[in-house]
Length: 242
Image (cartoon, rainbow, N blue to C red):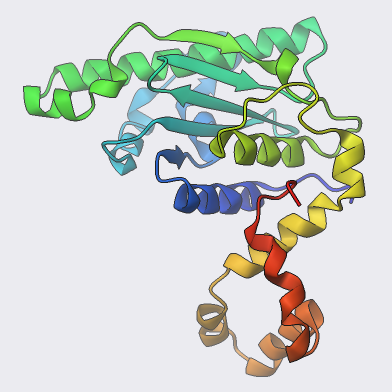
């Protein structure tokens, strides 16, 4: 509690969402900072992220992009390939300055899409058909007013994770989808930690550890005795729908 979430946590949850939602892909939190030399001045470098789309599969419907704003705030964007719309959710978007910044990230993503299309048009028709979801008249939509709003300065990463989880589960977000109070009451940070714990490859970690005793000690601290493992079963459910 009280700490900002680092990019590793958000990327890990993104990898879990990808596995559970075959129609979705989550770009690394480094995508936007790699694309944008200076988002405020609309300075972009597509060549630095040109290869990222090669990891996308043919049936992709949604591309999620967690964005680290000025290294002190997390927001979420999503490309909806069926609606040809770039959406953005900001859990702390109550001022004109934040709304202006939201638009700049939306424009950055529209630039990215235009460059993908330009790249595809220079290739064979077969390649163009394979990535036809990129083609079309894309629009931008700032949905921050319909995002639950955080009540502190610490949980923007939590809100970004929850928004991504709910959207990937087919939930249409609104400002009452959940609240800061529910995050605190449900001990959401602990639940996220449990999900990370459950989805780690502990055998791999064990093999890489210098001391098996250190690894075993950590396991005991996390789940207690062998017979208490059942208390971790709930982590396979949606984070807040418990």
